[in-house]
Length: 199
Image (cartoon, rainbow, N blue to C red; front, side, top):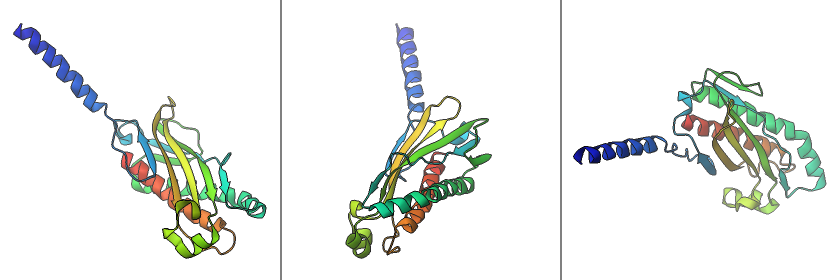
């Protein structure tokens, strides 16, 4: 009887150990909303990191008239490029991936970052110029994004996030395109920090 009980305890302790190992990594707490599904660091499984340009299809455009929307359409490719380049630059600097690149076909043990811009908010005039960082989120000039890290071979989702980036209020007394470019740069650095903490 003792042997049976010891055997059952041994099996149960082994099961508990396996379940403990399968517990997802802690959230990096860098971006607004984060979900992490991996139990091992990216460095243990992947040697390549690829960033795909974030999509803008279907992004909500808030507090802009038709002229401003047309101007946004002109600078949108630059905003996308700034985000991509800053993610690549900072992931290269902050991690030990052998290869970090953008918009290439994945090869080897690759993790892919893909995402989209979900909102471009020009903000409200008085709030963004006079209240600055104290203004409510909806009144400030900001961009919102969502994204995910996936295993290039299996398509398995490794982590997801969404975030809103404000800042640069009052720096553009005309069209807010300059502010969006600054925010895309800052967002790229924050996303890279998210990746670094999972690396």
